[in-house]
Image (tube, rainbow, N blue to C red):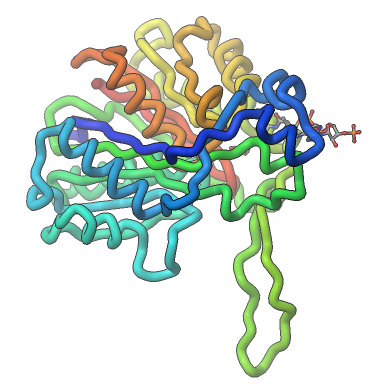
Length: 320
Ligand code: ACO
């Protein structure tokens, strides 16, 4: 018994902001952004929230899977930008879709968030604690960007992606995940400081800070190694894999991973050109785009992989 993805859905905010649009409000250019990252535009939330986007993505995934809200017994959202500290985004999704039989919780594994949600759902399903789960990655990253820091704010976007997973004979074949907390400060955003009566801390807004080159070095070494491990465990080679659906941080990271694995770049589908980097939402949005384009047939073997803040990383091989 394993865990199979039986439906996908996603939601992107209505407002599209191109690199040229950004160049009108800060000192940047389409040439700088697209040549270094592959990103040409991103969707930014105006009315949308992390929860509202998640609810819409969840409804679309349930429609694709043909399941009712009552059948969902677990909801996990990977996010670092939930609307409230409590209730969790997952609880808001539960209320929004009427999944009254579900247990709901969020996971923060930054850009690895969807993978962490998927693997946690797998643990619940294979232990018998759940049968049908909704796993999501959702972010409103634009609210934690410093819009005066051109080196980070141009990279990210907003959106949500969801998958319905269920106990089945085929599905997840192997998985790996890991963390390196000692390197956490390569990519960080501090939370609010303690402000109880015993301490006095300045109230100031904190944003995401990133050492781009360190993150790049981490990604291009850890991700191919992790993918090779899940392939070995599944008894497969890269040739057996139809697609490698990776976290969409940067086109150069994807090109480097494809080179290290000796796999044609065409096997690495892209959404970062029109979405930017949406952290935990990248992988499920990409997967939904692939699904809706008819790129996936039952029985195909695919690799999913996420990597990012923490530092964290994870990969799995699955049968579609
Ligand atoms: N527009 C124009 N110029 C810019 C911009 C911008 N948006 N941002 C930075 N610059 C300038 C800098 O000021 C600097 O100028 P200087 O040389 O005069 O000082 C110059 O461009 C180079 O800046 P670097 O930060 O060194 O740029 P780098 O070549 O490293 O590229 C990038 C930055 C694209 C982020 C790169 O480090 C990278 O690919 N990192 C991988 C990590 C990544 O993609 N992270 C995404 C989020 S993390 C994740 O999802 C896992």
